[in-house]
Length: 403
Image 1 (cartoon, rainbow, N blue to C red):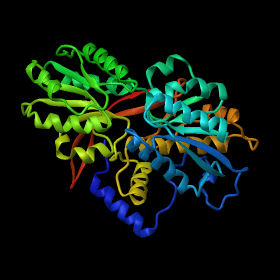
Image 2: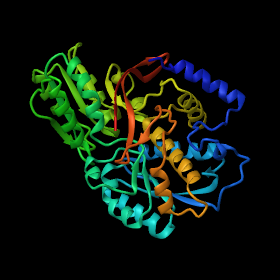
Image 3: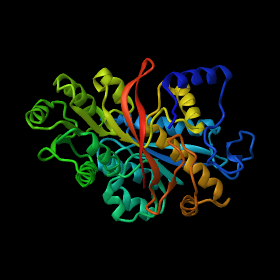
Image 4: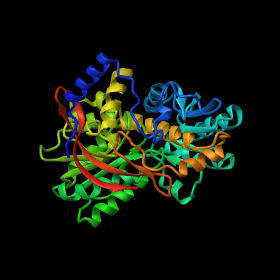
């Protein structure tokens, strides 16, 4: 598989800036692309979309990336979705499931939005499920959702990211063939969905012939001291380690792992969040050689991604993460569905239109919703290494298609 290296992306970005490139990235908004045309006549009255993102607390950086991705798409389409002028009303998700639920209620009851997007915390998505379903207002979530949500069969909750057990399943077979011996499993408890990932990883890893070194070892979410955890792994017979951390914990864990000076042939694998987005910048060279699985890599070679990379860098001065990409796609889903719905648009008709959508032309590669309202999509193996002068999650292989 060919892919775009960072130097090529930066050159494209520079060329785009010089040429004033402002064309929309996705063709998914409609087959005739009418909704992408800034001169098109609006197809109906203005609409209001709610966005739930953390504006305060420990998830704020994730919230920024979700906000950036959605805003980029809307701005590229002259402030319209489906040809209609759109107002995006933001509500602070905060840190807890309860604060996320309160944000959803505010958007539903006070703002009376047509649809909702965002949600960084998987536990918050589960907590607001009943309110979303009762209100019959579609939520297009743009971060991971807990596996428990699937069993409840939501009709109005869609996800453009993935289910929390998918990253572990995606990398497990590859890890079994590359662990070099027994593998230790470490991670954090909470805020939601972590047990899904560990359980799915262990099941698939063992079925592929992999050996686990003892029980999974965990610390509390947000922990910054990993000395005892890493000493336990070093004293075991583990030859490699699978790590499940995100946010500030991922930053501190990777630095602590590097300082612990494991043997040179010891390997570290993980979910994409371990080295994704803003955390990689703060980890720096300590993250080198870590392997992760995710549904996106910045150097994927397709037209939508090349333009997405260029325009995102132009707008925000950095390379987009999977969080930004999934939120960007959430806007594309709304754009295409609003175009498809009737002129007398309401939340019920919009939800039905989302259910009729075909393939979304995405920076991650084409995908479409399954019957469980999550993407059927490809998963990629990435390794942290220098791509030119830039440290990046470099695509090394395609793992599987899941959904």
